Structures are given as C-alpha cells and as structure tokens.
Image (tube, rainbow, N blue to C red; front, top):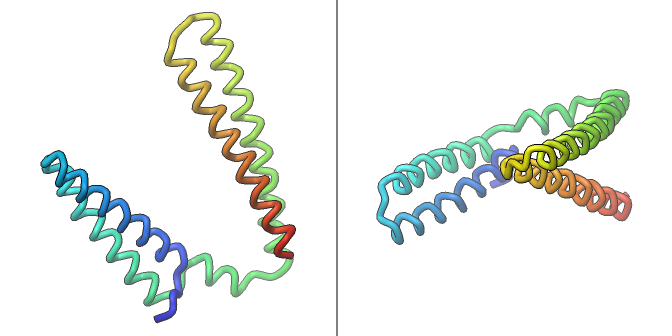
Length: 137
C-alpha cells in the first residue's frame, strides 16, 4: 500500500504511540480516564490511517497544482511570519521579565521562561532546516 496522505499517516503514528503510552499508564495506575483516552486515541489513529492510504491530503493536492509564483509567495509569507513571531516572542519575553522584576510574581517568570524556550526552539529548528535544505539542494 502506498501512503497518499503523509500528514494523516504521521498523525496516525503519533496517535498510536500516545495510545500505547496511555495503555501503559492505565496498567500502572488503574484509572478509567486513561482507558477512555486509549479508546479515543485508537479511534483517531484508525481514522487517520484509513485517510492516509485511501485519499490524497490537501497539501499533496496543492503541491501538484502550484506554480512557481504560488510557491514564491508562500515562501515569502512564511519568512515574514517567522520574523514577526520572533519579534513578538522576544518582546513578550522581555515584558514578562520586566513585570516579574517589578512584581515578584513567580507565574510571570514561568511565562517568560516558556516564551524564551519557544523562541530558542524556533531558532534551532530554523537553523537545522536551513542546513538540511542547503545540503539537499
């Protein structure tokens, strides 16, 4: 069988792994909520696997019909969005750090650390993807 919808296939794999983890936790703790979540996750996994093998995903159909101008506009839009997200994350990180230093509320520090870690993740992911694409092309 050939995978026609890559996104559905990946979501099915992730849902299957989460289902296995939920079953293991259920076996350890014996709480009903983990059993219920296991059934829901297996249903999501089955649905996504069926879609992955039966029909093309939206991303694959758009890729087949896109021309160079559409790809260029999408690339430019993504680049501008990444720049905006970096500036917004950096601004809010510093705002929450300043608010923490003024008010000494621990919650503000947790929010600032979370935003900073997201910004670091975006930077590292952007760098790794760029290196990968340079080697590939």
